Image (cartoon, rainbow, N blue to C red):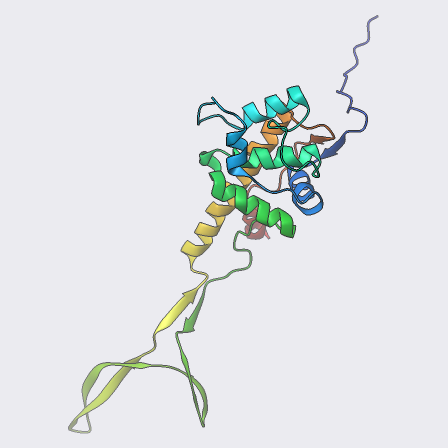
Length: 219
């Protein structure tokens, strides 16, 4: 009788499995790496302007070092790989602007916000202090005429200008920005998992929640 055993790929010795977020935060917090957009392009003379992260990662996997071989040698090669991948982030997931956002959040150890707990609220645009207390500022908007006790009367009509905080469209905008950040992380994760380019780390499948607001709605 033949017995079949399911084999799982062994993790290389000395290689640490991390999530894409852990890898990026390590690169920017501990290794103090920085994104150098122009340097990455200058290191590849003759390449078409549209080369992407995949090419960078393949070349790094072949050479085991940064493609250009120059610059500072202090950061870990894997941290430099993170910076190079971010420098080539596709425009479809935010491009350079998103790369800088990811780097800034990673340095602070934060996730992208999505408007958590930001319920819509209406507030007066201004306040005025009187001897009777604090009141919302109002503006004249016309006159109201009415008849009372056989006489025509007239009073001033006033309205209170307001501002709407945490408007639903602001929440929708924040969620779209979060989803773009999430998509950029997935792009980076898949690139490292498929094309490699790392020497001391292995990127896991883990990702932050795709729509954390769904949990809030259920609760």
